[in-house]
Image (cartoon, rainbow, N blue to C red; front, side):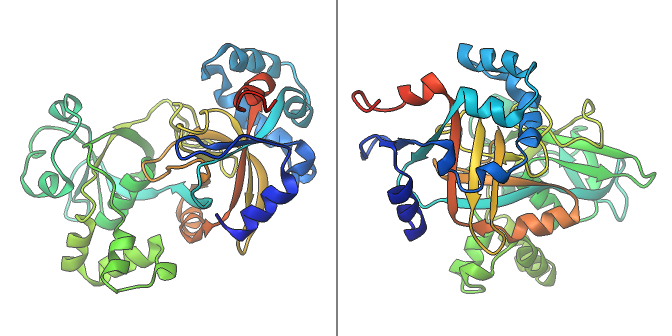
Length: 345
């Protein structure tokens, strides 16, 4: 646990469940213990909450969503019906960023557009573990089956499209199509950035998405092999129901919102729940977000991925982010206190 978080816990403790090797520690806080709470734009978070709360499960969440339709003040709504809950599993807090890539592509293969974006084949849907990335790319198993959605002009950008899980494809006519996550081959994600560190090419603090892209482009043969170090392979589906001006679909099958949506580990954080983040680093960020997405690399009670939007600028901002801090989940009042061990209410 970082010194920053230990200090925050010492200063902000109200009620704490006992630490355990098997169970996370739960601390119920007050809103005045959330650093910067009063200065945030709660209505912006409230609008994002309304986007996905109709799909939340549990009678308390459904009741709160119904009440939210008639509320005028986001801050009053959150403070009246929720309590901040700090959930820790012993791992150091970490914030990273993600974005929706925008690639140049074509609906037909050409000399320029030769890297296919695939739909998931039926046989991969029937098993939990299918072929690895290397096998998919080198054996011809996908060829001639009409599984291509589009072709793009950059294999490295296609790799990162798979890492992000969704994106927009700009066709030569200027028309945009959007693709979203359609499934995966079941293999565990391996970080190619950490592989470059292991090989001694870079130190860990030097690695970013742009650094990886540039290295692969400077070393096309070794770069292709580096990308295949990650055996996980993501398939896509065309997403026609989302207008181009709205955000991509998250894990709740609703559009996510730039700088108001985060990806979380649903083992610890209920999808659709409001989450207060206090991100440290060179550009601190204290704001209310909504947990509307997940990610294969997002594991742990204090792990979050912040959505920065669409396009290259969003990608540069997201790629630089790797900061400590803390995140506090806003839970319905009764549910919050029910999370505490017996005798701690």
